[in-house]
Image (tube, rainbow, N blue to C red):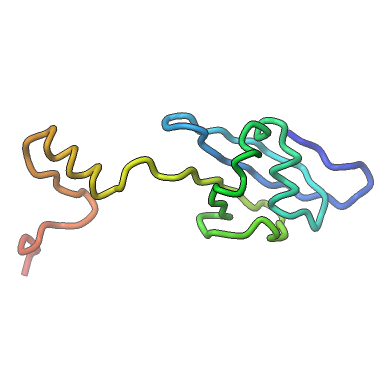
Length: 116
């Protein structure tokens, strides 16, 4: 946990990022009130290796894209998104070719299969 200076009002935030597929990292930060996303990222030693790529990364709070100058609030969850390596539609096509059968989504029923 990264700590803020003593005596200043503090807020707790969580930082989550994935440097590569299958590797998700979490850090809990204790920062000063009025801290921005960029200041939080620079204050986290575990995130230091990602700082040179900061301009090309997309960053959000609780799943909504935000700018580096966004002021943080108590219990915010900063999420750093890395660029996609494969288009999601193309990845689905590749899985279909490998499996040799139709991949049915678990999230919605097939057309015409609903009960009347």
